[in-house]
View 1 (spheres, rainbow, N blue to C red):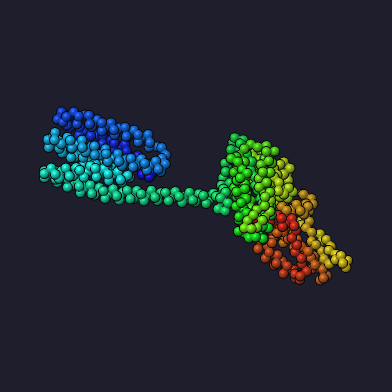
View 2 (cartoon, one colour):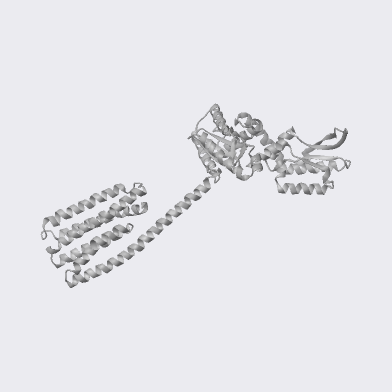
Length: 507
């Protein structure tokens, strides 16, 4: 309906222009011959009515009309079109007794050309065109056929056949118009659906990662140009992986969906909540909050996990940690703000689990330190600088030495001795851990080859190693190539590595 109304509104000025010009021309040829009421008053009223209707349509043309209102307007147009058409026909026929043959021809021309023109103008509103044809052409053809004049009868038959052809063209055009409109509507629907799929998370119906970073980029640009202040947050669930593994992905999905609903309930108009992937959610607070207010927002977010999740008869208790970065103080780009909020989250999970943490200057110093360590790890000869210390393992029952645990050590000429938990943590956050593991494993196996056959080697692996199929195959190849009985090798995974890998895999 809306498309029909919009298309028709563009034709309305032309429609009323044709009616007015043709009426003025017909009236002028009968001045002084027909009564004044037929040559001035009646056509003047009709032209005035056309002008008023044209102004009404011009005012209405750019308005957005609801479908129901559009339907009412079109129904009124159909009825008014029939009445107005019949009024013009009655006026034209009332002039017929006052003219000679040439003026009769003008009346015939007026009716024919006006109706044909109006049908074309009304082609997008087929009922109005058909009503006009029925109220004008049908009576006019009957009038001509009943006149008894051979020429008039021929004109009537000709006009009837032309009108039939016009109606056929009208039906085809209106059908094509309807098909085009339906096609456009379907295209728009598919476009909207594609936009929704591209920007909305299908599980939680929250905005997805793409939409999150789009909005974050816009706000970051505003922060650079206008010192706009806002807050970026990254939330990660604590204990979700255990629930997902123990009860299945179906339960895990429902927990994530309910988490999204809980987050929306505690958010306000300034807060934008998105699911970034796995059990990680993004938060943007478009407001210039101080640190105390940000921590209050974080506490409210973390409080959504106070109540356990009841899903399919299963009660699961999980928590949530959140890290924040304040723009523009913490960074000037979307990527930097996200990374620093993510680092604050990493800090929260390591030391303040279940609580909010704001990225601070201390974190900045720590990031620079870790960045230096990462850069150094990438450029050094790992085989030359990494070494192992072997910690004895004693059977407390027999007081006998049964093996050694390999402990990684790193001494760099520029950095000095770097603590194992520091450089291993850096390596686990990058792709370097696999290479480091292989270097240290070769050194450990080389040392163990000279030990007595009843002593074992305990070697720590990162969880990142265990979830990498390529790294596992490389480790197996190294052990097989060492010639050492695999039963003498104990592979251990530290609790810290498990906790960090849990977060990594959930992403």
